Image 1 (cartoon, rainbow, N blue to C red):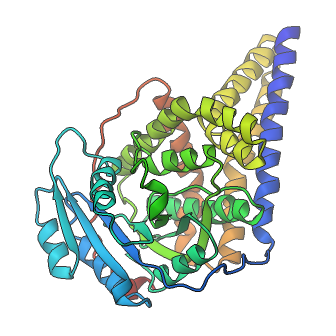
Image 2 (cartoon, one colour):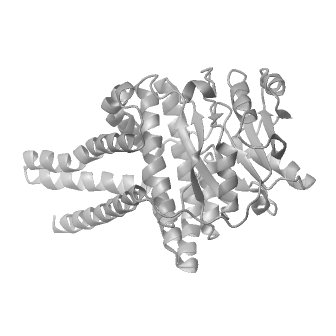
Length: 408
């Protein structure tokens, strides 16, 4: 029991220090820092890239929102990659005003492969663009998106994540759970790190990359979470990612639990793939660059599955120690110390963020009540993926016909 006690105390300190670090960084999102100076006054030329697999129901709304940007129309082009489509996505995108590239490859179906294929052509053409922005086909973009990203380019940023909002947050408790999760990440992870000089991460959609930084290697990702993988590769190279609160995209979230489970399983599997591929490289980057940014990137990749496993081991040790001594009540009290903060603290955090960012609380009451269930199901997904990992990409159906004026 003495050895178990020592191990228990060591794990308690590791978990406590990890979460104290996260809380301290998160608080920095509440501090308004001076904006970066403009290095040059320029209107840059953009590519808007939309990988789309059977997205005929929604792709035209995104193209329409991009065509109506408050940015010179001659300085950006809208490309849709109709990726292995069996519906009329290509036709809908062309009719809406996009330039369509059709791709068919049964062996490589993920968004990462579609971007790799398309960007390789643009690199070979030496296409005259300063940067490209990537969107999911179910998105709709705020009219100031390119203006906000142009400002970031002129401030010297090279890879920038925009603000990912939700276009159907109040459909049910599942979409509300996604909304609360993203609102929390936007402020307490991305903005907080940007404020203190650390690196945010790409978040799947609504991001910008300066074209020249990929011309040598292309878009070279191979995991199910190409956004996280690309982020980690940049952090390893010592390149800090940027954050643009004013570059807003609205994303459709699944309303069914089965679809949500499948989507989040894919994210967890992709995270495990990135962990296997890049943990060692991140550790070497910490040693080489001696930078807190690199260390923070390493903590990110260790903060999900490894920290989850450590917490499970800690709970198991507590169970063995207390049951072995016949202290059932003490065990319950000890478990409450871990479980109550795990599920209650996020609700309080969500309410705080919604107040600060002026999000509507009243339509979200179901999401707030069931948010512990949303997070708890994600813990179950993490546990399942420790043993069973389906690496097959599964499409999430998008059907909500919502236009940009309806979310604004």
